[in-house]
Length: 302
Ligand code: HEM
Image (cartoon, rainbow, N blue to C red):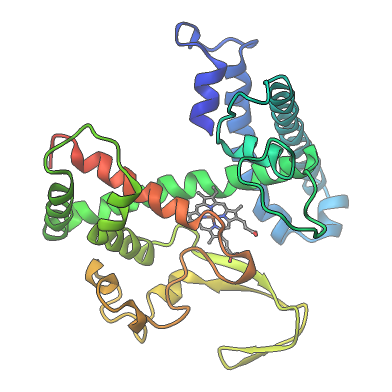
């Protein structure tokens, strides 16, 4: 989405920074996203009373809230702008399939793949709801995917023997054609590539732990948790636990080949779990595999 925005906002011949250009605002947006990321820990760990009343925490608090308001307004601007564009597009003209367009058109007569149901969610979403979704996708979908790819490349570079297997599989499917687009069929056939991507996310889960709250009294891991109690599930630790993963520090994609039923339930959770499991998990995994492909299909420089 960011790359598309960049290309849309700034024609090639204008790609220099000046304070009025959309690109300038976009750069500011990225800076503010970084600040927002920093502020997450502040809101997690600084108690409410301290952040409201004790200097300098209360100044930081105000700064972070101002930052969040700026981001909200910026994103709402996109939603409104795109909504107007869609309204001005004749019905017979096809719309693009980007996430923003799909969200705006959901449950309207412009929806591409309508789902019939009569529940409380069968109404078009408000600008505010779409803004939340877009922000989640930006926050949850971009760095996670790019960092996953970086670690995959890292582990493959460290394991020439495994990398050779990735090459062999890619060669077998693409037969030397370096230009044709990657299809869904290819992705299905690339089992070793997928196994390598999974093994890399086992060794280095990009989100190392997730935050959960018990909604009932429950026993997990032999401990009793009270309703309302909050805790972290530590993926990194689980992925390195010897009882689930023999030689846990070694990069062995073969673990994910063959009968995957032997992988113990909940011992591989790079995308979290439960009802709030990552909704972008398939997209993230496919993007990861496609990056791997693009890289290795090219002329090879080891
Ligand atoms: C390799 C890439 C990715 C990894 C490792 C990853 C990992 C995660 C994890 C661990 C969670 C928390 C799940 C939990 O609480 O149990 C999460 C949530 C989320 N992810 Fe991803 N993600 C990736 C890609 C994406 C992509 C591509 C998108 C969107 C297009 C996305 C959107 C989201 C959203 C919206 C949530 C919040 C879900 C909720 O709270 O209900 N993620 N992701």
